[in-house]
Every structure is written in structure tokens, then in C-alpha cells.
Image 1 (cartoon, rainbow, N blue to C red):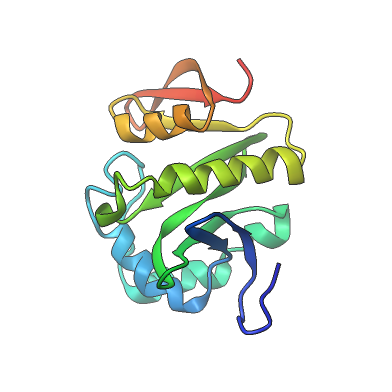
Image 2 (image 1 turned 45 degrees about the horizontal axis):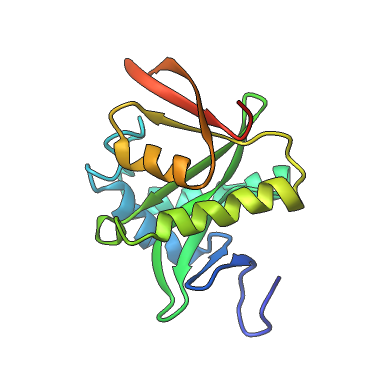
Length: 171
């Protein structure tokens, strides 16, 4: 779904948000998001070294073309503010739902709203048989989002040297 006045592809909308493909101007936001140690605390990811590295990530991000899905920018409709990202990723034969938001938007319902929409896209539009969500066991906030969107606990596993949990649309 493309708006005639926007140079980007809008994937979906909710009452407060729209999800769209990343665009070059998102580099600054992605750089800042991944440079907050609390935001990436439970991800196993490292911060971007520079704004150039964040821009390079966007320019080489090919998941949309390769798989028809990906991590999408989450934008607040009222002011077009970049809140974070949410989306689906094919990894090791699984369709994984993931999300990451600026701290100032934690506990606002945005992650649940965006993740719920992504889950709907995966199950109805992309016809995925199963969607999983994974989080480190101590990441209670992300686990709550996975549960709120209807994923059920499946099992524990080892990730990044600690215990993680696996949630799924199938139990």
C-alpha cells in the first residue's frame, strides 16, 4: 500500500501507527536506537559504530525483496515520529517476530499494537503456518508483549550465554 505523496512503502496501519519499509532517513533513528545500551541489553546485538554504518545497514537490507517480509519502521501517525521497528524475519526455517523501540515509548502499548499487526500479516497475508517469538528469560517486558499478542510458551533454550524462552502460535 503506497501513498501517492510518500516515497516509501507502507506495509500496514493500526489506529495509531503505520509500519513501513526502512528509508535512508531512518539511519539517524536506527543509529540512536541501537546505541542505547538498555534498548539492546537483551538482544545480543552490538551498537552501530557510526551513522554511516546504520545507513549502510539500510542500503544493504534486502529482506523485503528476498522474503517479502522484514523488520519495518514503526511510525506514529499523529506526528510521523519514528518509534522503533517491528516485523517478521525468516531465520533458520522459522518466521520470527521481533521489535525494538526507543525507551521513551516503552509501556505505551506501541510494541503490542505493532507486533499484533505483524502477527496478523504473517498469519493472514503471508500464510505462515507458525510464527515464533524469542526473548531472553530476564526480558520480562518483551515476554509480556509476546503473550499479549497471543503467542504461547513453548520451551527454554540457550542464547547469548544465558537462558532464553521460545514462544509460538503453535503449542
